[in-house]
Image 1 (cartoon, rainbow, N blue to C red):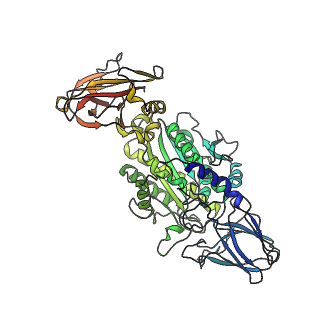
Image 2 (cartoon, helix red, strand yellow):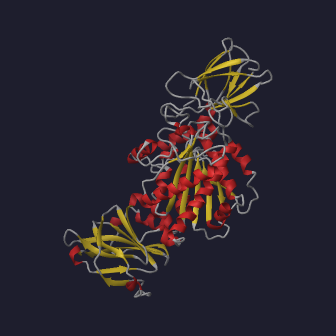
Image 3 (cartoon, one colour):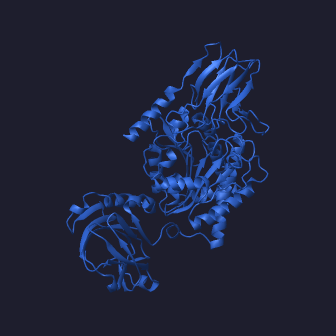
Length: 581
């Protein structure tokens, strides 16, 4: 039912944007175009006052996106007043302004000085200025993406695709692919933007990333030879075109949806990345804009900054990336200096961690939890000031530097570790213990895991008799129900490991304890290839698996001693899935 209400709001949002004619004269205010948003409260041409507000639609609380056009005010001075509140409605430099139909943009305070107050501005229209557009930031909708795409069409391998239909079912959610030209990618680079529809600065940065990959630079050439790249410019496509706030959408927005999956684009992106990252290492960037303006000492909102990760290994990588990106941006029109980067326990990161505990996962956190994630970064880019006066060209410069720094981070990390690990060694552990609810984190580790996990999630497993065989994919993947007696953990003495098949084990009737260890080299040399097994005596650490959980034992190092109980002998029934590696 929640999903249906979300679809309905996405369909109706654009229909609520109307053109309003002043009762006092010729002034007309409209937002009946892609990205438009305004609520006209009052137009008093005599007093020169226009009272407006953002149309919040399905937004929880206050937010600030607006985009409207004024006609018939040539030669006049008007005072635009937003609601009086502690909330800010204007960026630090005031509104973005266009007098040529949105082709070019300037800021009310183009000199970079701060505009006050945060909820009102004056504007004097030129004598021949019959149509002027005002927006909270430089707008970016599908037609802007289409214009940028003309630079990339015809380039080697570039493919314009569709991720999915939008939430309303009426629009395509664009997907740009730049595949590895050698066809054997060891990496996948994924970029998303506009999880929050109002955050327009992110798209200019994404354009710069794409331009850099296709530029012929040494970093771009490395990407072309080693990585598949995917770009989703509008995760909330309906919101972008309808001029929604997007942030804090009810019941939750797109960037809190990585558990509930009520949005089509989130489901489609998760499916794409898990499937297409199989055997590859993931580098992920989710691009955003922060709060509308700096507040007190919180100058981060007028800067470019990133968030840390709680994972210590990826944490070191992101520190390397930050250092290199700061070097790349020196002397550029927009600066990233790392001064406002956030750690794992402060600011917005702490709020995201709190949301995660309530079941509201964001994209960066979801990717960061994937076993083959090499780097997962959320980048924020100020609306009007971003270490300098924001422009589309400046945003693209940030994207150039971001891509170069990501590649340099990989090269520097590989150099420090003595070279690149193989895909299998780098992207998967020997043994995984996890809950079935979190199985999708591991689906990208093998192309047959989607089928295997679907079998693991069957609701009738408890009804299947011991010995039942479940056909999945011929001799490549099958399952069977096994029943056996458990023996005390103290009797742990024999381990097994496999060479050609991955073992997935799922308890059905009760807990089972396993001995776990890495297969010794001398045991690996004694594999029975015909039976795909080696047995060897040993004692190792133990882990207990309970119903609702599963274990994966990868060949050749995932050695295990099944059939143990830490509470005395008992009988167990479980599902065993064999997956050809």
